[in-house]
Image (tube, rainbow, N blue to C red; front, side, top):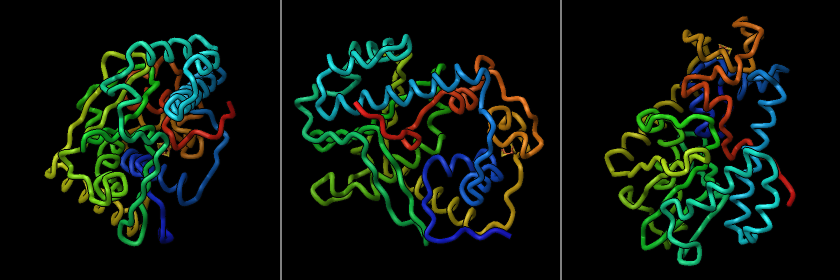
Length: 277
Ligand code: SF4
């Protein structure tokens, strides 16, 4: 029997893990099992790509904190980083007005709100407020651009917009944002001219928040966290050998589905440690 100790801090990643595989949620967040397996082969190449993804997020964060772009360009010293950084600078503003004209820019913003006996937390790459509109930006360094339909149902898309309504009033002179004021943009470093844009409305907000509440209630009360029946989920999961779902990691260049591509290549801000400049 497993009982979730309150208050438990939920995030888009843990909700997505539960949706993908309840056992992965249990191993990662309840048992906190560090399993010494790689998520993709070849190991070195995969690790390089993940580190580059983290560095790219840091470069953009430093840019919005005011570090001159020339200084940051010198840090983009690998082929991937150099290309991503050039794409970022060349396609700026990516739907953003000029840096100087945005009244409020919040890189690395963390928001949280209570949900039942627990908390929901999100770390945003960038939130920009201008003329009573608020835009959530998320930088993606995955090797493939996912379909918009697929991104629209990811827990990240649902949680980030809903939590901004629930917990973002301090960014809006003390009043909660109306869902209609919110837009979320995924910008893909390797596909700079093809961002995904998601507007928001009250109906979607109601649906999303109720889905989060339902999921949190379910996770808080279930006794069993079964292994996923969809064994494709296991190909790039570090718990493969623990679960007897195969010892060999999938090959990076075989990550052919959107789920696999995101699992292997994508970096979200929650994974980023401190990097000194
Ligand atoms: S290996 Fe498969 S069953 Fe085990 S935690 Fe990972 S996704 Fe779930």
